[in-house]
Length: 322
Ligand code: B12
Ligand code: SF4
Ligand code: SF4
Image 1 (cartoon, rainbow, N blue to C red):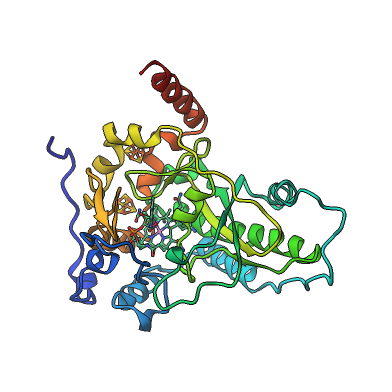
Image 2: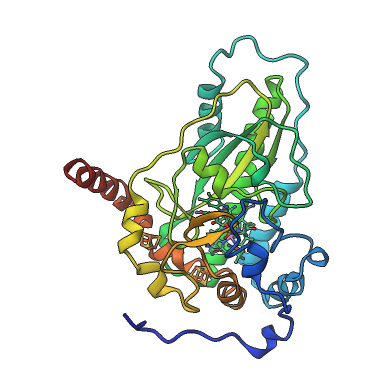
């Protein structure tokens, strides 16, 4: 079926700083071997071919007091020092998974899951962090605001939720440290050393959607991820399959809505795995000019409040019958 909206084209101004290498080559499209991801964006700009585009993004932000305030709030959360590590682990805690879950809820996470750190989550050229566990957390974004995406308000909301993700991760890390276990929080917005999505999927938070972001059974796609690394005595949660992948096979809402037509309709072979993929060379120019986009998260039917759990139930019934 032809698209109902014309495909958006990037400005010549942005294309002037576009490198000669394709982002899809860097991401390993068509590669048959499993390998660690290569840093591509939100890394120190001098270290990546698309670094000048990162600078272009910030140069085109304009002045907006609400955005400046949200960015300041995010930086304050990042800069806050960590609590000291107590000399010995609290003897009163027997079930650390349950205690971490309680701490995550108390510090503001909408959901969390635990998975083992794996070298294949870590970017090439980065050391595998010396921690056994990743506590991956999800913080919801306001649907009322995100449905205006791409907009100035949605960029402010995204920035605020990065601040909240960082504060939540720091709260959990400080709680673990106060209870005698080393812990390190990570909340973005820079990419840091590892990928959050494959870890979050392993930790049971949801599945990869056609739009290249995750689908959570309750939050849909309208959330941000953050995480805490630790060696506390935890156990891994299990991955969950609630049928969203089958749903994506027959749904084209995000692909039809994406202005630069970046969302691939078929699964693609990337670094040895066949999965949903977003064309970097098409998404990034729009993302930069729209100052963060996220339209694909907003239009996904799972993201509409209350709809996710209903769809999950329907998909479960369909699978029982089928
Ligand atoms: C760099 C980056 C971008 C870049 C490039 C992304 C790309 N795909 O090439 C740009 C700026 C274009 C971008 C755009 C967006 N991003 Co972004 N991005 C990141 C960041 C910092 C690093 C990811 C990366 O380097 N990807 C490059 C390579 C590895 O991509 P890839 O091979 O296509 O793999 C992607 C997925 O398939 C999955 N993945 C990787 N390996 C495997 C293996 C398996 C088995 C599976 C199932 C999945 C999987 O993870 C990758 C995510 O980009 C992460 C945070 C983090 N540290 O992980 C956030 C992150 C992935 N982005 C996020 C979001 C929401 C977005 C946007 C919607 C924009 C927005 N403002 O909200 C769009 C969506 C476009 C898209 N789907 O790609 C969220 C996702 C949350 C969610 N609900 O799932 C993250 C986790 C940030 C966060 N802290 O919440 N992003
Ligand atoms: S972030 Fe925007 S441009 Fe990128 S895939 Fe989503 S809708 Fe398309
Ligand atoms: S909009 Fe449809 S195809 Fe796209 S991720 Fe959501 S459910 Fe999947």
